[in-house]
Length: 106
Image 1: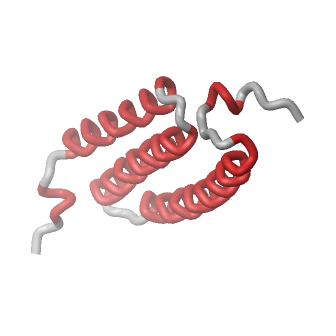
Image 2: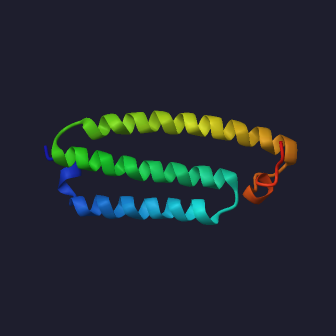
């Protein structure tokens, strides 16, 4: 049976990963909602995961898949901590707008 990752040209994975990463960067730079910014960071991490899996499959080893596992663990921890902070902030000021959050004083 033919490996499906190797039947698709490597350039297509690179193009898709670059496109997803650029969407994530644009979302982080131009959006003001903190939840959307966290989602764009996740999109950037997943685009890197796609690239690592495609390159490891192309090379014939599993090193990239091991890195993907650790990236997913870090991303899950980032989401848990980030959402907990955002819920706490939202309860205090009723907004997740980055401009409002930057004016907070401790």
